[in-house]
Amino acid sequence: MEEEDFTADAVLEGPPPIRVAVTLHERRETTRARLAGGLTLVFAVLVLGAGAAVWTGGVDVKDVKDVLQILLSPVVALTGSAIGFYFGGEHPPETARETSAGSS
Image (tube, rainbow, N blue to C red):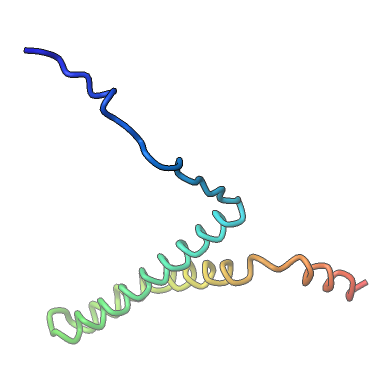
């Protein structure tokens, strides 16, 4: 059996792919958005899941209340912190300069 050499068959046509440089600021904003969105999703799943469990009658309301008392407080705290960090984390440089100049 003959060995085949496929390296010569690979012919790329056209211009090389364009690489887009991603800055640290863009990566940071993407990460903030994913964290805030993910924690908001966890919160929504927790609340909607509890409501669905009670609505379908599969779980007693007292049991759902006990579980929500344990899980909801830390999820609300984390979600609120993440959303606050996401929306309050970046200020335009002009605003920061105006604030520091106005307080002097």
